[in-house]
Length: 94
Image (cartoon, rainbow, N blue to C red; front, side, top):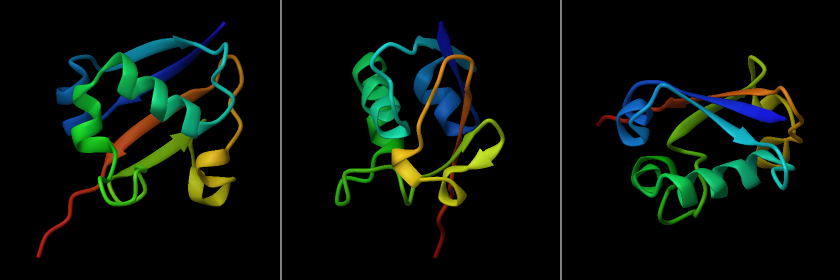
């Protein structure tokens, strides 16, 4: 039983891998998944989690089974065995 997490761009660099399988036990939501990723791969926090907001909102597009979480339930989007989560960095410029 696992959830597959795929990393794109800078997230691939931070994680050191293109893909990671996480046991789904205890990963009930995207928020749980983000917290688990930061525990397992501390380098991810730097690029994924916004320090002021404490969440990945401005730094990442997160897709669950091909759908952006903004059209689902945001960080509270439920996860289940076999789901695929893709993390895509958002580049900001000025």
